[in-house]
Length: 116
Image 1 (tube, rainbow, N blue to C red):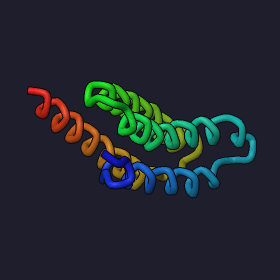
Image 2 (cartoon, rainbow, N blue to C red; image 1 turned 90 degrees about the vertical axis):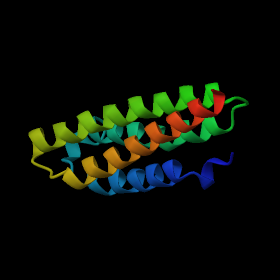
Image 3 (cartoon, helix red, strand yellow; image 1 turned 60 degrees about the horizontal axis):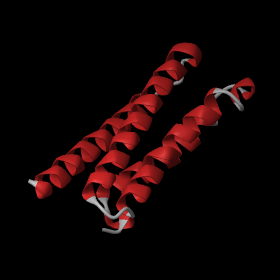
Image 4 (tube, rainbow, N blue to C red; image 1 turned 180 degrees about the vertical axis):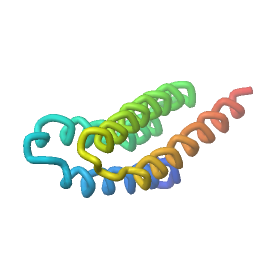
């Protein structure tokens, strides 16, 4: 399975682009703080999908999808912090992140059902 064909990977890549654009709004003092952390969490999401898809087994792929879910939860927390600390509206990013999360969970269900 090629990761570039997966809707979950495509959506996650779009989320990364949005995060990079939106984090430009953060104060300069956050360049090496929250901005960097958010970008790393966002990049981790499609990166883990790609790495998991390249593995030999569905079981390994599922494990990497769970890691992507963890990074998604981390990003969600950071987006909420951006809103609380800097009044940066993040509803659209939170919605995109949730779409990605649902795609990951659907892919996990599909891969688990193949093994049954």
